[in-house]
Image (cartoon, rainbow, N blue to C red; front, top):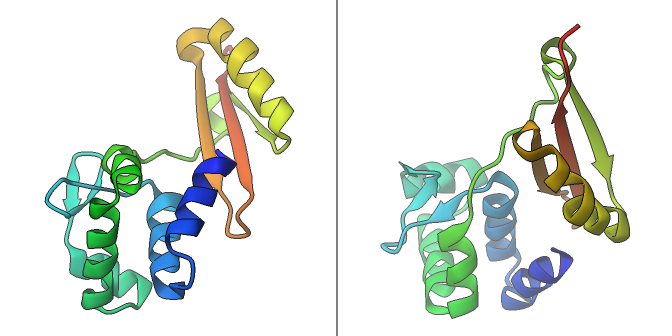
Amino acid sequence: MSELWEILEKSFKGHEVKTKIIRYLFMHGLGLTEKGRFRCGDIEIPNNKIARALNVSSVTLSHTVKMILHDPTLAEIFLNLEPTYSMKGYIPKYNVLRIHLKREEDISKLISEIVPKFDNLVRLVVHLKPDNNLEVELILKTRSK
């Protein structure tokens, strides 16, 4: 996953505002349609809403979208990017256990050994933190008391 962020950073090196845009999109799981429209899952979000939220010009936002869609690697990332959810506000109430992992070897072990054993009781969420560090969140549904 850190390799993915390196691809994004390299593609926008020297473009501070465009880097801010892709970071925001990535952190919020906001993808693009093939027509260059922003989406959250299947819901399209007007470009002016994204520009306003980031306090950037619509022109810069449009240029960023064009850069993404004209680069096959970036296009693949953002055409397939999906939103995730966070349960941090209501974890205790709904009998779920939340575990944070930061070391890559722990993340690899989690994905290869632990998650497959729990089938649909597990949700794995990956967050890119503002300092470019990844945080993996494992959410495990526990038995009711």
